[in-house]
Structure formats: structure tokens, C-alpha cells
Length: 145
Image (cartoon, rainbow, N blue to C red):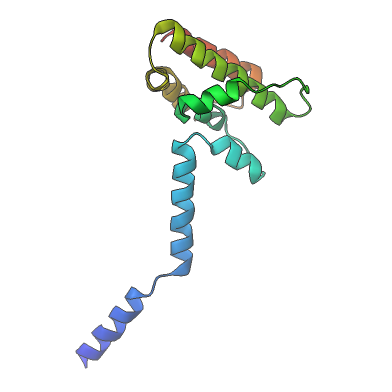
């Protein structure tokens, strides 16, 4: 009798829970987005609220080539929404990160580790900030590299 109960339980335990699998896949996607600096972009596409730290997430985790691509974007169309203002702030701060990297002869990864990841953590507990305040905070953090 115990054997039948054990075997039946084992078969049930081996069947994947589709809800848990979906939640696990979503968590993996969120981690990948965080570690690649794509949280703000992801949250904008889902129309979610964008927390302060998500705006610096790109600067803190994107590759140097991704920063260069963003820094070269032309933003002459003007600021039509708050997201445009944040995008402009990201463009100007990405350019500043590359300028500091070139000036101090240190890698973008080093700047990210020393200045931008700590700023990302600081912004995790900050009240809402404006794009101008964000830009000033990034520039201030870069001055201490």
C-alpha cells in the first residue's frame, strides 16, 4: 500500500507546475533585463511605473558599445513627454560616462562599478526625482571617479 502511495506522489511531484514555471521564466527575464541595463525600457514597454533606480540601471550595466550608441542619438525632435525628458537625460549622461572614461583612461566597467552601481543603489531608496536631478546626480557621481 505505501509503495502505491509513494509512486503516485512521485509522479505528481514530477509534473511541472505551469504557474511556477511561468513565474520562474518571468523572474529570469527580469534578472536578465536588470543585469543588461534594460529595466527602464522594459517598464516603459509594459506601461509600468518607472522607479528612480531604473533610469540609472542602463548606465550602470550597459556595455560600452551600447552606451556609445545611445550617446550618439540625435534628440532634436524636442521633449514631448516625461519619457522624452528621461531619454534625453540618459543620452547626455551616457555621453558623460564615455567622456570621463576617455579622460581618466579607465574602463567604462570601472566607472560603472565605482560610481554608477552605488548611485543605482542610492536611488533605490530615494523619493521621486526629475530628469534634471537625475542628470545632476550622475554628473556628481562621475566627478568622484
